[in-house]
Image (cartoon, rainbow over all chains, first blue to last red):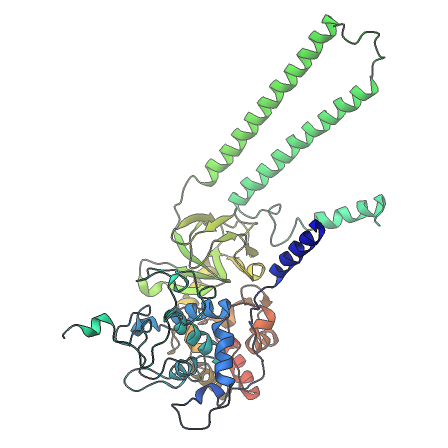
Length: 185
Length: 334
């Protein structure tokens, strides 16, 4: 019995050897073109069955992609308009109200193609993999990703705790009105 | 298996590593001299102590006395002489430790006696490259470059060391000792070269995945050459002089390159990756990873993650016909 237990314990320790994959290097072939991610239920065209959501899952469940997204969010000055998610001249990203949809593929499309009244298009300026990393990070601001994968490091002053310290919030269809929006204007 | 003779044959090979463009034992500046002297003084004294200890040990083994009838009986005469020998050895040890401490203190006092210099550089460590800003009282004469530091010979140069992400360490062994770059604070280090030449430096504090590929080059010139270099670096990039390079510039400005890199004189103004204004004049690319030539540059642009996995330069999917003009344009930035 004792032997069996120690063998089981040893096997359990081996499970810790599995490490999350860090995918640095997408396929080097020149494939810039119509990304499958741009086709979602709110754009014209046929939605590829399953694919966009699956791609989003791969990015949202990977701590490396999420932290890269956080770094790029700073580097590409997203915070110039969206602040650190709290919103400024651009809408807030940490609440659950979304003008153009809060699904992974909606956010990726917003970054890639831009939106009227201010959001520029980054097509051709940010490689697709990085757009998806940023989209995944934006999802983590709204607490839509696993807490153990969400970024835990803040390099500068932030208006709130790191993403991984916030409780996950179940999505509300259509979003909710934030307290600031409820006060009489 | 190695036998003793082949080990002896290998020794000179290891010693050969002590010379060259990146070596503590090949000092080319007054501060590196101090450190090299310290090393040799310590090595000589410690070697002498070791030899003496071994000699006494061998002597003691050779002069083994015969076993006595009653080992508990003391011999006052022998006890006294042994106590004298042990006391003298202890006193000598204490004196040597104090002397070495004083020698080390003296060298460090000389190393850190002043932080005054004509030329001041702001060196910022990034994962995994070095940003170098030449400061000047006139803002228009201040400029930024990357991974390559040019200094005039015989003149102390003050480095203000900062970091943008994690702890790095600035180490050009032939010119000065190590100094850490710590996020949120500024450390000072003076480097000075006594001879013209190219010296290699390396990040000396593990800073992540590509720590080993975070090198920098220090080029020491005569004062006139240095001034000429500085004037050329202050100027903005010249517009491309032929249609191929012109096409290369268009590609640079319409592709993701422009999100991170800066080329003064063009709309490219990213501040998070190395300044490429005079990229063509540099000796190396990717922080000392590759020699700066056409083939390496093309390889680096096509597949940075194959050369330096985890580096922040992303794989940009360029068309086959776009590589040639882009490389040609970057090469022309002199």
